[in-house]
Length: 248
Image (spheres, rainbow, N blue to C red):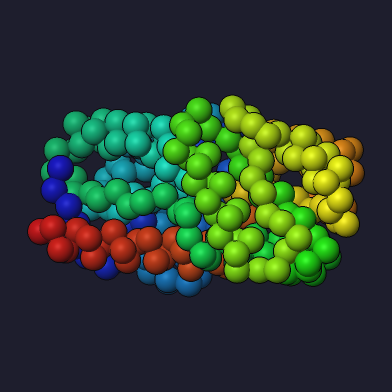
């Protein structure tokens, strides 16, 4: 598959997909922000599962595109599922010129978005009496979980929080509930939860319920259509186009 080198190439954002309609609504709200920031840019959503259109469907009728994983860490979906869907699309449209960009995270803009959501939940950013639990969905890929732990360490280094630690809603330990309990027993004056999740759904609901029951003082909203994510998507689009130009 040849690559694009055009700054106006359509942006196809590929999300995981969910049976919960709030997830697709959140993706569309985020992409509406991208459309407003870049009028005239063709911006489309695609989903790997549970929702339509699929990536091959979203690419239908296009002769070029920049495909961006709407995923917060690199794992199975970005390494296997999206390339497989691109190969399927190429089989349907042999002359399609497409390039796949990196996942959204890790990136400093995501931490800024996390802080935005915490502030909206009434949390003083960098409060030395506040321990932050950074919660991701979790993955069977240890590299993805290690990435979240690294984000937590860097966040703790750049802000005077009591601590910042990682927890995982599935597939890895500690669970968000267990981490809130551990921090409380360790003497943290306040414990708050920052979901490293793109959209509402099963995991977000579970994290909020379980951590509040465990004694968390506040649980921030999911990242959703935060303006930092709009900026990041456009940055990833430009980055992918530059990489394609350099490789041409």
